[in-house]
Length: 431
Image (cartoon, rainbow, N blue to C red; front, side, top):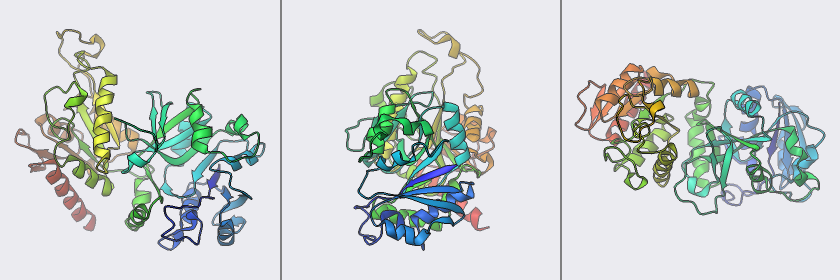
């Protein structure tokens, strides 16, 4: 597989860290960002790398050289004048005949590339964009996909947004060689990858979306630069690669993340529990996957549509994102075993395997994200939650006064439960 790295950015927001080198050459614990990228690629057998360089590109060439270096064959495309984030790609037309990886030069990442490639081949679109949740969705481009994983909306970071799922453009793309045949590349000029190449594919349903919680962070600001350094120190990069088993903290929704109102049917009823966002943020910081598992019988009862439920969850993700927190995924059961409700959906009235306290939602999550359930936790405010977690093989944390089932720990609030879990996790790692 060939990887094209767009390494010509100036990095104006990160200039105070080091303005004398191009942004991709800023050091992270003694190695430039580009070297971290190349090492991550080589570990997964990507051995041909094309770097697109411009501003201070000589610094990159002097460091990496050309030919067989750092375990890969490195070549360059040199921009004599700035060509934006995609203008130089036209020079690959006729030279690249296979799918290729396209990566922004200012990100640190470690992801399962085989999984991404297989997804891209299955979708068979001109491009597949890697999305993920992050802790700063309000200054990021947001991508919405349909149930088939095809992009339906792209909200640029300067555009207004209301309630949106926290899924942002990570700066990693799997592209078909056919992408280079687009008319936008007929003449060499300054081209914006997002606005002029990828976003126009949405109307033609030619952009697939690959969503993953794996580690991808940009160095856009000094604050994020410092965060990445800490993550690298704590081995967060390879730990989050889905080639490795993950640990998760599963969270009930009603009464755990949002205030309990019985059957929540309207978006205006969605209000976070005090301290919930801060607790979820702590989960994010410690490298656990934050996954919501929730029974939603209102769907089977005909009291709420799946699109209405999606809007409610978008609001929840927006409220979490306002405080720098995010969930990695959400799994819900739409079924209900009892009949007799006006407007009920007959095909959803069944005794399923996903309705807690059964374990179907946990199994789905474990298969999707390579989760070790025995190293994971379930937090909830009801006996159903605790029994579901125990049935799935997770450790359990009960919150509030309603829980009678025996749990591994019992705390008053979500925040207290998360801190106790993290404390126990730290102790276990030191043993």
